[in-house]
Length: 344
Length: 216
Image (cartoon, each protein chain N blue to C red):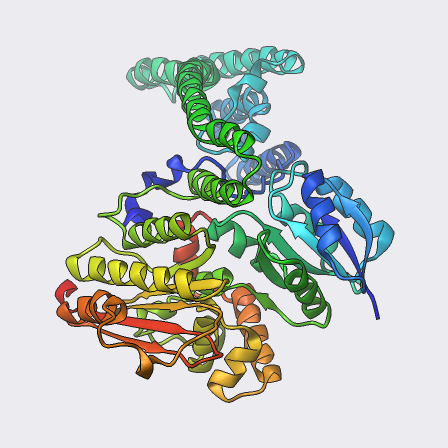
């Protein structure tokens, strides 16, 4: 099934409707920081300033520095968490924050380095360099991200350029050609209508649908069959398809029978012609319905092969059933049911 | 009694076409060409029904969803009929879940469109065969065995499934009624209930189905 492939959406030209989230304001981060400071203050009151001061205060200063450096990123992360737009970090009004932030970070690390770690020189020798490197990495991360971002932007541009060329080629091969044909045949309304309908269907499929092969998707196979009937007989068929699965032999028989039924509807019935297909775990049900004028099934000449062979016979060979309901003056409906035992 | 409508579509040709094809007893009060002008037109003219294209420029990129978020929710909010060329299930269902009372494709005939407008105006839901198909798909009614679910909202009743299936097969409301031996009013009630479920359900299956098609 092509819905599940995951990549199928990248093949759809028109993006689904999407609403962007409102960017949250940066003061929330500051508020959080204030509350954190307050909490630290309370802890300091509880355990005494001397115990806490040597590492906690530099940490707070460092977090403040990080918030400053990273704050222009806030809106960017909101709009797309996976690919933050770090460009805003390097905008003009952000540079002051960056300078102050980097200064604060350096000061915080220096402050921490002053501490003697409770007279444990070994711990100090290990922790100070580690803290320095870690702090530098955290503060400099936006620059690193920009580098990565630039690479991906370039790649995206190449992909977009490629896609654009492909879309242009498709439009040229389809829409432009059809328009030229329509202009040439403008005296023949039938032809123009047929061309326009075929082109509309083609463009619609190109824009809105995930493209699958007929073997992978019985829905695609049935859609293609109905398109052929539309083109051959110059009628419009409204097809609604529920569920999908790879096309097995039995399902293909149903598609062929449906095609025959739709051809009959196009030839003898009137528009609108509706085709509804529902694929469940248990069966594949298809209904083909025209809008009259109907006929009496009992009076059909036994020699006529259409219904008997092409629809009923074809389906029954694969274990399914088909029935035609009609009466003079009413609509004709062909119903086809194919059990799906072979799938389970 | 004439129905006042506002037509929203970003293509002039379509707006003119829709305006021409509507019956005489439907009065076109205003038009919109993008999200902003649509909201403006609805606020100025207070129509009873808005005929709303699904894909619109402007706003935050949500097209009809932006318009719906803005114009619904007040006491005198208009009823909305979505009109689209899009066959994409996610767009259609997203718009209906956002509050549209019906969905028809742009290939609909003039009398049918006028009929749909009147139906929406009188509070009924308008389901095209395609929308009925999407609903059956979304509620996994096609799966046959529907797992036990707690809430009635999350499941179509047997009767609602029958009605949806017949609409998907191209039956008009009247024909559905005749086939099931129920009145056309009862058919409308069933369709209204399905619309309600589609809008309010948070059924697990629906969420999964929507995620597959990237509906938020």
